[in-house]
Structures are given as structure tokens and as C-alpha cells.
Image 1 (cartoon, rainbow, N blue to C red):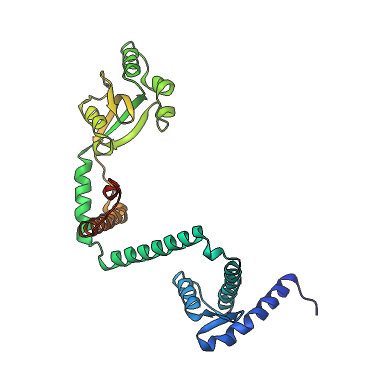
Image 2 (cartoon, rainbow, N blue to C red; image 1 turned 135 degrees about the vertical axis):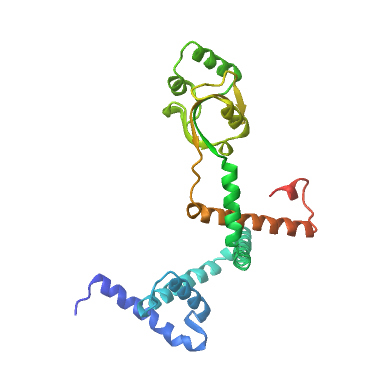
Length: 272
């Protein structure tokens, strides 16, 4: 009988796995060089596969056990060469175990402290209030210095084209090629100095005084306004729920900090 390459691999794999099933009677799924591979490891992987909708049939069982055997072989070889005693490995192992436990705790905390539908709806109403009742369409030209902004305002005063100047001079990569066009936005969606200037403008007018923000100096032109069109509750529900969950976790950490005795370099405990 002539075996194909794939059939040969399958035969070899099955031969490797035969002792694994025999070893399952003593709480392990296989033994490698006399060391058992725990049944609990197989059970966890199989449960994770099932949770993803995969059917754990005999073929999948073979694959899982074979991967555990391969992993154990490398694990033992790494121990033999002393990699598990190296300082970098030990530090990484501790950090990994710590991160796993922290993430597991946080997931459990979220599960036990769910955000209610009422809380999400309340956050949605607050979100709509923050958006305000008006949206703005504007262009801007962002430059590095006040002098540059004043020069642009002077050029506009002489009939300069705003969109053309934005393409030539603006340092905002997101709007430069669009002639400074920022699209529609709410006042709450912009940094305060910028939004304060926009709401004072009349349609078609531009700022005659440079507006400074943390990004630089702006010259702003208001194109149009319209009534706010907030997204539907269903569209933002998941995002609001995650925000509320994050706030709950931040509060948890704040509470734990307030109760703990922490000794650290100055300023370190203030970091969030």
C-alpha cells in the first residue's frame, strides 16, 4: 500500500497520540518522558474551542492533545537548557501571571457589577445634551505662529481664497488637502478655544483674530449650521456601556488606592 504525504503525517500523528488516550485514566491525557500532561489543560482548551462554536470531535481532540505533547516536549527542552532560570524569563513570567490574574479579576468584576440599561439611557441623554442643539460646518487653517495666522487673515482681507490658502499653508494633515474642511461637528467635539470662536461666527465669515489652541494657531471660517442630528440610542449603546464600565473600573482603582498604604517615588502614585 502506498501512502500519500498527508496520510503518512496523519498516521504518524495517530501513532504519537495512542499513548495519550491510554494515559487518561490517571488524570492526564498523555505522558512525555514520564511527566503527565494534566487533563485540566486539555479540558480548558476544549471548553474554549466549544465556546467559539467548534465541535470537539475525536479529530479535534487529537489535534489538541498533539499540540499539548509538542508543547511539553519544547517545555522540557527549555527547562533542560536552563532558560526557565534566566532573570529576564523570570521577570516576564511574573508579569504575565500578574496580568492574567488582573484581567481575570477585572472581567469578573464587570460581570458581577453590570451597567444597567437605565444607566446607559441616562448617559445617552447626557450625551445628547453635550452635543447641543446645533452643529457646525467649518474650515480652518492651522499654522505654528500667531504671525503666520495674522498674515493669512491679511491675505483673506485682500480677497484671498480660504480653501486655496488652507491647501498651501495649513499644517493639519486631516483637512489640508480638503481645503481645511472639517465637515460637521458639535461644539463639544472641539477644544474649547476653537469651539468658542466658531459659535460666535456668522455664516460665511472667518475669524479676524488668530485662535490659539494646544495644536497651534487657527484661522477659522464658518460654512454653515444646522440642527443637531444625534445618533440613535442603538447606534451608541455599546460604546456608552463600555465608557460606563471603564468609569466603574477607574472608581474601583481609586477606592483601592485610597485604602492602600503605598510607598513609591514622588509623583508615581498620582499616575492613573
